[in-house]
Length: 472
Image (cartoon, rainbow, N blue to C red):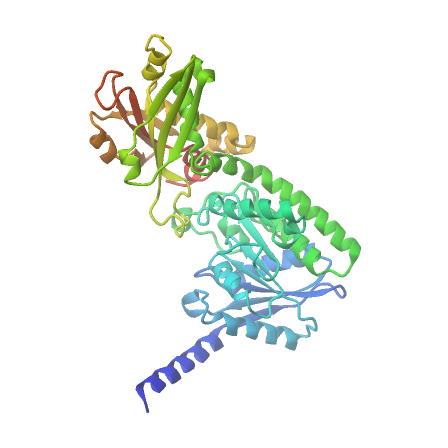
């Protein structure tokens, strides 16, 4: 036998054996009538199908539909994967039919890793819709071929709400073009819940799961989650016009409610970049201007390396008005797009600003006291707190670890400033130490410069709503 054919037969046999190992526990509906649908559950990594019995039961109780459930289990190493998933879904459908299900309305519902694989699988399958719990779609919502619900736990310690906000931002744009988007691809921020409350099992220490302590009981979380799932599946699959209308009204309310929790994140994220400029660089330059901010116009360019390193801010005065051109470079954690345990906000923002002394000199004013780069970090924290919802601030004040702003690391040359990173470290709180370079208005080549490496307001917000709440 040819070696290639041997390998192919081995792969086919392995695939068949692995797929056969996946089982499905079928849960009968509790309603005797109503539109028939089935939820096919795919568990999270290293989790078991049985952990989702309770959420299946609570969804059944919340819905007027005739809801079946199939809990898939037995993936290799308890790790759902694309190789075994088709066989798992086929096995679940076979089990549902054998148990008496007549409809072919199958809905994939995946938690965490299960959400990742079911979201990809749902593009071309027998599924009629998908529900993601503690997971998100790795593509645009509007291009997904079937309806999809994204449920994001506000206090998810593994899949940050600050990653799912990207999907909500996309939904906002889609909804501005078609109101049906909030029914077809809703993205819901589930208040006060964490990553593990989509399932039910014995508690695991949070220092192992990296999850965040929730604000609600498991029973309350399951009831809320079931409410969202029911609104989605009823709106999508019910043939009762009254049920559909009520479900869509509920989804509208859920969209509005979620927006209240997503909006602070969107606001702080928006301070990073607007086209080719950094709004935060404009804000802090005017902060340097102090009482003369109303006569200062600031233009900013976000530059990449090495252009940023070569750049220098400039200042022009004309008839009592000041125009300043400054630059910014935004650096993120390496691989942050794929590692959702990492902050989604910038690692640091590098700002090349004109000094307060340079602004005052152009206006024929006394130099005044030069602000510190530390004061910009304090301002970032102020913006983040002011943008946050009251209950988020209360939660932070009650059980969040504080931020400590350290005095600036003062550098004496541009090269030293460029090579010295913003200093941040954690213990009983987060310590942040900016890096500064301040030059005299008479300095050759660097006249009246104030360079700062600082924390983004978005990073301050992530600390408030996520990282400060973790068990250190």
